[in-house]
Image (cartoon, rainbow, N blue to C red):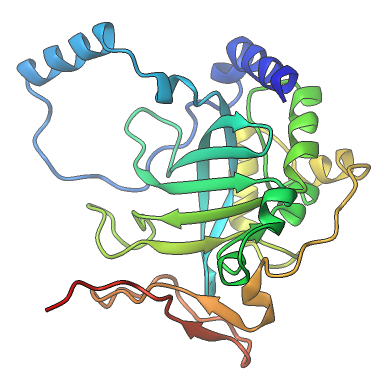
Length: 268
C-alpha cells in the first residue's frame, strides 16, 4: 500500500488540476453574509501558520455514487477525499462537489475483507460491498495515471464501506438539516440513474463503459455474508424526526423492512 500511496500522490501532483479537480459545483447555496476583511485575514493567517496533519493525509480522491439505504431512488454523486490509514483501513470525507465551497456531506470508512469478516453480524448490516462500483466503472479516481487508478481499484474491489451522510444536499439546499442517513453503493446494472452517471462522465471526460472494459480482468471476489443487507430484506435507517423524505420512492421489494437501530437515550 505504501508504494500505491506514493504512486497516487505523484499522480495527483502531476495532473489532478487538469483532470477534474474543479469541475463539479456544489449543489447548494448556504445562507450567510460574505466573509468580511477580518475573517479573511484570520483565514489567511491560519492557512499560513497552522499545521493540519489529518487534512494533509487526505491524498486520494474518489468519485462515485450513493443511495439512501431503504430508498434506491434517492441517489447522488459523492466526492470522496480519503486518507489511507494503513493496509486495511481508509477513511474519507465526502463532499457534494470538488470546488472550494463544496459542502461536506458525510464520511465513509473502508475496511479490508479480513476486518469486515471479524465484525459482529448486526454491525455487518451497516456495510456495503465495492465489487460492482469498481467493476462497473462507476467508481473513479480522477487525475491520476490509468495504471495507478487500476492498482487502486484492484485494492478497493475486495473492500467494504460504511457511509453516513450528514447533509442531504438533494433535499436541503441551504443548511444540513435532519439526522444522518446510512448510505449504500450499487450492486447491479440498472440500479444507478444512467443520466446521473452520464453527466458525471461528461464533466470528467471519461467513459464508465470503457473503464468497465479496462477492469474486466480485475477478479471479482465473492461478497461476504451480511453486506448489502438491503438486498436480503434488512434495511437499517435512522428515523428522521423532522419528517424529511429522503428521495422519491421506497424500495419496491415487499420483503424489505425498516429496522431502527438501537439508540441509547438519556434517562428522563
